[in-house]
Image (tube, rainbow, N blue to C red; front, side, top):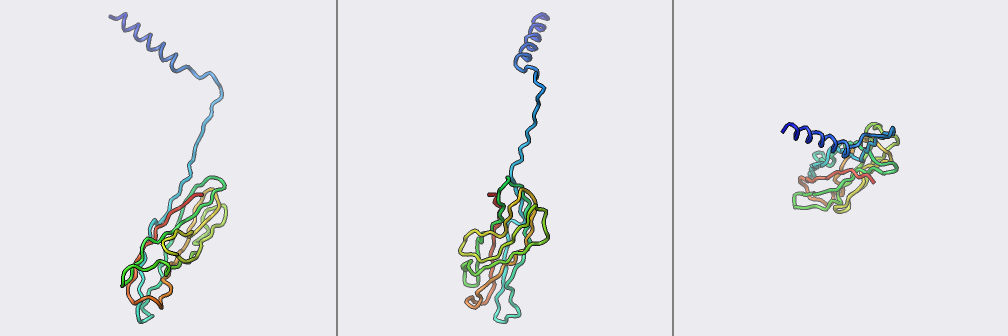
Length: 170
């Protein structure tokens, strides 16, 4: 019985030696793969406006700080995208075309190249570029002010909506 145990142990050692041979080369390489990624704050912005018959009580702007940290492949373009998901007023749904935004850099960020915070208007539920940069890695921060425009054609009341944000590494 003891002899079978010794033979089994010897067979295991022989199998391990054949299955996992020792390294014979002095050349060892380490490969580290860093995938592109990004983090964005906030991911969604809740908008709240008030249009009053007395203009001193109007709230027609909403400002938000948008920050992105990213790591992209060389030559990639980093874009912060915005998509309005809803806008409702006192009479129901309102076209998002009455929304505009103005972006301005908030600090310099830690990127190798300057970034741009864009301005524009929303056309329907289209996705727009809030900011963009061509850099490999870093952070950017934009102060974005959303505005309710063309108010002369809108009834008085409260307007609420939301805008979803995302980062795209092209």
